[in-house]
Structure formats: C-alpha cells, structure tokens
Image 1 (cartoon, rainbow, N blue to C red):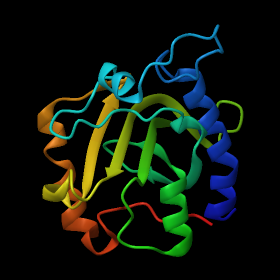
Image 2: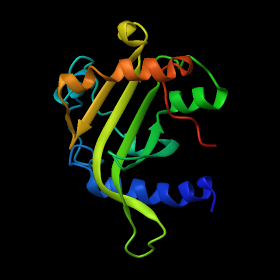
Image 3: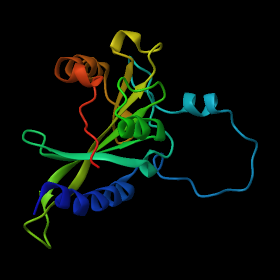
Length: 185
C-alpha cells in the first residue's frame, strides 16, 4: 500500500481522535443565547500564549484544511498532521514563497501505536502536542517572519523549548521559508 493511500486512511482517524481528546478550550463552543459581543483582542488576551512569541491556539483550527501528514521516528514515535488556514492553503496551492502575512499552520501530534483491530496499521495514541506557526513579517522579523507556539494540553510549554523553534527551522528549511511540511495534494 503506498504512502498516500495510508495517509488517506489515517488522517480522518487522526483528526477524529484529536477532536475527542481536545481540551474544553479547543472544542467548538455550542451556540448560546445571544450576548454582548467581546472584541477579538479581548478574546485573544484571555487565551494562554506562548512565551517569547505570544502565539495562541487559533480559533477553529481543527476545522482547517489538511496540508500534510508525517511520522516521526524514535525517540518521539509520533503521528503528525498539519492543517492550515485559508491563507496558508492558498500559498501552498500557488507555490508562493515566502508565505504571506496571516498564514497559519498547526501541527497536531500523537504517540503512534499499533491498531488492536488491524495490527498492520499504525494509529494515533494519546495526543502529545499542538504546535502553531503564525506568519507576520513585521512582528516576527527576528525569527524569519514566523511566530511559534507549542502547547501541551492547551497550555504553552516553557520558554526554553520555544527558544529552539526558529533555530531548528532556519537551519534545516530556510530555503522553504522555514516550513518543513510539504503540501500533500
């Protein structure tokens, strides 16, 4: 079975597992009685933000379009899916580099494990991280135009882990605007 076929079978299951494991803050809210609207800036200020970059988990990211999937070998042993907002998806489709301001990518990761029902398959286990990249060339000029956020259980990890983001991306994929994930057509 080729890699694309495997990915097309795995991705829906991975996204479904993520939806089930999402924290209450990540799940879409149920419609409530009309209330006084809260300005967007106030909503963003209430969210946990990554140290250094101030990146938060974007609203509705679990409904964004799939960009690509990957596996990571030991020691992480993860399945990963990357989704993007409409700006990022359009840039991928057009082959536009650098990505335009406003592009956002979110990587969802799970421990990988053998399926109990179908041992030849690798399936998502427990979720490990949600990682976010936000393109804003002015705000993040010192980090190649990208802001980074890494979250575990909806909370940002420490500053030490965020200090490694830009250096890793720049050293390995500078020629691709610091983005690892390739578009899976």
